[in-house]
Image 1: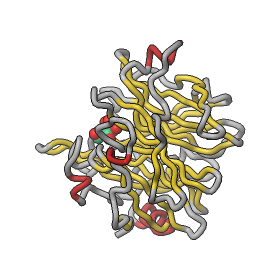
Image 2 (image 1 turned 180 degrees about the horizontal axis):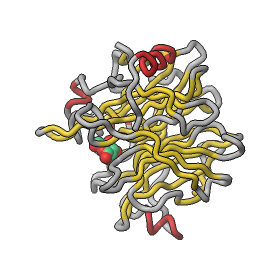
Image 3 (image 1 turned 45 degrees about the vertical axis):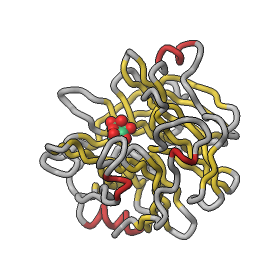
Image 4 (image 1 turned 135 degrees about the horizontal axis):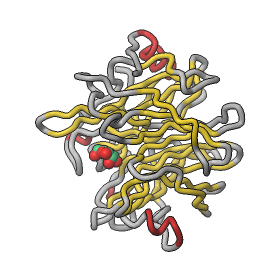
Length: 308
Ligand code: BMA
């Protein structure tokens, strides 16, 4: 097994949240002042989502803030596009600040919002960085030739749910977009793929933990896979692991708000060469597992498939 599930999963459920929510899932996690900060998604009891925050010393035992971290904006352009809620946050640290990307839902579709914080207390919304029909945007925690880089997941009928890369000088204007990874027919990720955790720098390349979806007569199955991007040019895929690294197997992944889902928005690399991978189980609870970064890299390199 590449990923060792924590024995006491799930690590966070709605019972741990001091305000009424139906779920706790799909969380971004980063280190801040020697603590783990988790920004998680919750369905409210009307079915729309908000973001909560939890803190931990060991990355496993989390305490949730008394109040939600981010709710739909009450004014301006963000109000218009966050009307139906905020989903699936990813968090990275770059140039002294934390960048949070999240899906913003409204009657106009789903697009990606970007917010900044230095202390996880005051949050500044920066920009809506995509138009509609984008989800799962992760920003690399380093710049390339002075540009921010992100993996994103637009959707169109001709090129369904694939992973693209885009660049920006200022986090606001994005371009130089390029398709870099596609779903593979009759394969565990044949229906959709999308970026999961923000990429992790390794000596062999940027490790990208992504999700893949397979449609069955009983609905979709969400699993996780890994790919390696070139360190200097992340639009180049060095390898893409042919087999998944995690699939729904435990009861808390098989049944819940949406069954058969493991969905990752965050992973924290540790000094000992391991990585804590966080995933939402069945869109209901938060789970964690550990893996050796080297083994995930080998998984990409040893049995790779064509990314396009
Ligand atoms: C996707 C998103 C995720 C969710 C997944 C499984 O389309 O909505 O937030 O975890 O479906 O329901």
